[in-house]
Image (cartoon, rainbow, N blue to C red):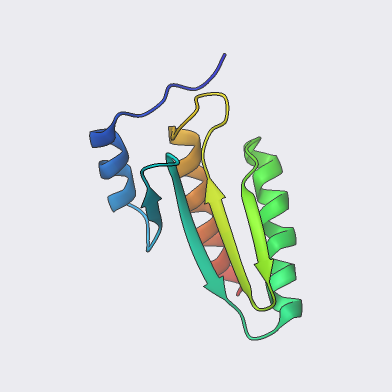
Length: 100
């Protein structure tokens, strides 16, 4: 069973709890970009996010552009944003703050 899609006011409330994630209303997704000191560090972050995503059973879109990594989250089954997206976004922020 798919997680329940959040309504616009729920999305806005959840977005307030995140640090610098942006809402793409037309795609019903949230995204954030990080810049690292080297390509190696950027890829290390992607690998750690992959591991974290597996543990959350939620799989983000990740794009690498040399020292920049962009992560986009939405719940495919719900065709929009759910609590799973915001939970993973918070976990990614914690991971990056602790390890990078």
